[in-house]
Structures are given as structure tokens and as C-alpha cells.
Amino acid sequence: MSDLNELNVGPRWYVLHTRTGHENKVKAAIERIIDKNISELVLDVKVPVQIIQTTDAKGKEKLVEEKLFPGYVFVKMVMTAKSWYLVRHLPGATGFTGPDSLPVPLTDEEVARFTLEATVTVEAFQIGDEVEIIDGFLVGHTGKIGEISEDGNEVTVIVSSIGREMPVSLDAKSIKKI
Image 1 (cartoon, rainbow, N blue to C red):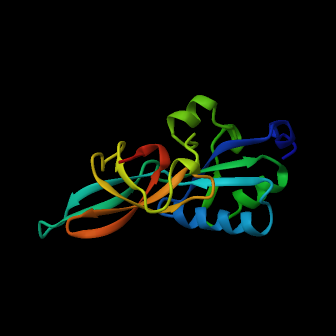
Image 2: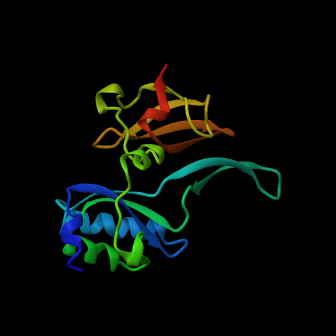
């Protein structure tokens, strides 16, 4: 695919179509190749999810993670023939979105709308901080920060709900200190 050289404008977000139900497997495979081969070409990978509260057949309430875009994985990468080939040919991946399977990067507006990149920095929070969730399904719940991603954009908050403590992965901009 020689047209990929024209797309090489630095790191951009692309949408990779996957077999339904294989999103997390493809994400894990991309993370493995980032660690091994092409960390300078593939920078980030996300499967956007939301946490919803459901009731099972016995009437018990539980929190369930639901994919916002089933069948799709978002990949921030520098598009080259090598990076395209390595990502596109992973088991479970079916191709990038775009005409004739030629990858088309997301616009800055789409990246903002899909909240793929946050502007909160790691200095804003520390492990153990008491926080309140201000966005998403768990609005109003409180918890403690258990983990912070290296880039500071994602945090794991330990939330007590239904008599149990459960870790919830959130964007850092979805919480505030108490």
C-alpha cells in the first residue's frame, strides 16, 4: 500500500474494525506489539466502555462494563506500511475504517467527542486520594484512587457499591478530589 506514505503525518487516532467480541483481545495483541516491535509507531490503544448497573434474574443489582463501540478499537499510531501491516493482520482485526480499507484518521473534533485524549495530568491526583465521580453512570459515587496510568489520563477508583469494593477504570477528567 504505497498510499500509506501520504497518510504519514505523525501520530493520529485511527479506528480498527474487529470481529465482534474480540475488541479486548485485539487491544491486548496491539499492546504486546507496542512493547516488542513498534513503540515509536503505535502509541496508544483504547476500547471505550461505560459502566452500567443491571439487575440479574434473581433481582441482584450488579455493575457491568459495556463497550461504547462494539466491534471497534481506537489506535493512536503513525501510519506507515509496517505499522499498518502489523496492526491490520492481528487475529481478530478485520481492517481499518476508510474507503477501500485505506485508513482515515479521526479529526480533532472526533477525538474530543470520543474522549480518547484527556488533558488532566498525573499531578492532579495521587494514589489514595478521595474522589467523587462527576461523569458517566456512577455520577455521585465516591471512592479512593487505586492506580493512575503513566500518562495520567486514566485512573482506577475503588468504589464501594452493593456492599462490595470494586475497581472501576475511568478517565481522569471524570473525577474530582473531595
